[in-house]
Image (cartoon, rainbow, N blue to C red; front, side, top):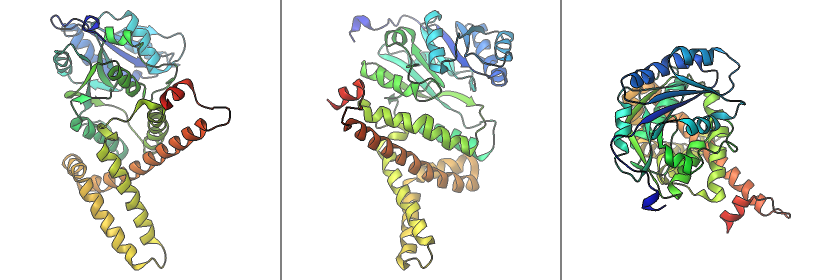
Length: 357
């Protein structure tokens, strides 16, 4: 990418909000009014809701009633395809991508615009706040873990988050937007796009003060299913195909080491629980518990400050389980990738052959 190709940075950028929505009328009632108010104050240029062929007609009706411009997709293609469609007709210099179940804070647009003061910065993303409306364990856990990593990640990031993130429109179109063909449902399409932005020489900025409230109510079953099938599997496939693993957020070197500790801790507890357990098994379990506490001391403090001791004990214990099932998923994906490469008739794709070379 040459300096000539970089977008100009003259004055304050104009902003178009793009919000994919599928059966999200109940979320739009809360997520749209703050954005429409920003538009009415002149802080953003337009608010575009992309209805992804929702069976529920109130999705479109609600968006129009609340004052957003509405685009209806011809067929359901997932949030990536919906964003790509809207990006082609958006008028702003910057595309602010906001999920339908996310309520942006009033000052987020100011943080967003300030983040593009450097013309080499192609994208910026923020963080959830600490106050999700759903107060059950799964929702609190999912929200706080996301916030924990985004509040402590490197400002110069290798990744991107489309829940509340913005991209220069010129860069978005230059790189072809999200890979809607590969990711036809909510997944890691934003992470993959982030890798492409970085590979093209652009910078991505994490702005921890660009805050938003997450409205979704999670169940533990949804947490595990989403973590494995919509995050761990596609992310592992991206890594083993040659895109590399960044040393940031929840895939940093420190997090990988903690996943090893978590596996040994759970194994030590299982050994200690066996009938007629080896006497030293109890000492091993106690030792590994201490190791896990020390390794996760910052997360423990963060959980405790936000939700108290009861949640902290449950949250940290569940997070060790998360480490294990995420790591096991990665190992299984890596093994499957190697087996495909060694298949007699070459089961690898062109992308995988290029990565191997």
